[in-house]
Image 1: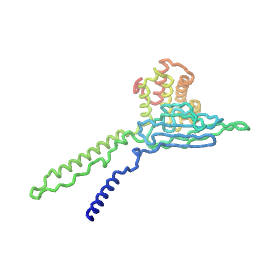
Image 2 (image 1 turned 120 degrees about the vertical axis):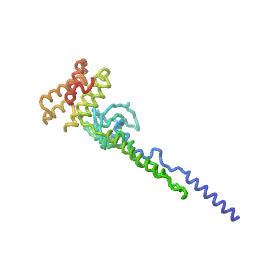
Image 3 (image 1 turned 45 degrees about the horizontal axis):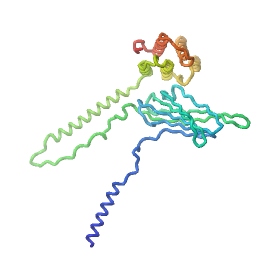
Image 4 (image 1 turned 90 degrees about the vertical axis):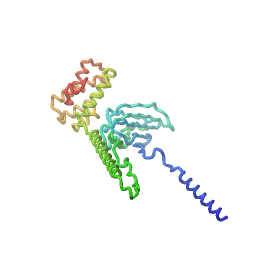
Length: 329
């Protein structure tokens, strides 16, 4: 009997041990994925949500900024209209969803597609929203704004960076009979593996250094202009073409001067560079003609001729310091 009791105890112990190993850990398959960068602000009858996904991305990725406004009845909201850039991101697209009603509140939602312009921690500045509330003594205007949002942008090759953790450990030593002696291959093979691993790491590190070369403002502007012209937007959507052509010039000015060109209207921008004397008079005049002719297409429904489009491209190249032969039309 005692022997049977001991045997049952051993079987029960083994069963419990197997059950313990089979028990789920409770960790989500999405563990390690950072939560979206989010800001939720409530002021009176209005609540404001801003969310950026993903919170950690590569320079080649596109991010999504969702702006959601929920208001009570009787509140008039002035919806924000973000321009060509926000912070260190270029706005590549915007989608406005139809309003909906949730818990007696009207909800408006705008979704922006963002493209980062550099690596590191990038900040999306606070986004202000104005709203008007009706009172017995008249209307009162207020402003609520989101908190700033931080996003981490890595290089394109960050996920491919070599790590010593990828290397296999050396095999355990094998005991050799004393009478046979130690084969020289047991010394040569590990040494060859170490040399091959060192060469692989050096080659990968060299490739990463080449890929992570930082572009100068002029090189970055030249690359943006090449990409714009390769899309042939001038033939399909001339208004969008002029919008992006002026955006290339404005971003180049922002990178080379202290002027926040992408965030200003043409009138504000020209007034600021005139007050600061940012450019020589003749160069400022050429830039004014370039921007004002583009505004006619963007805002006044002007239809330019092929000669006008070609001239606008040449003006942009000259201002960026590019020789006409460096960028194909």
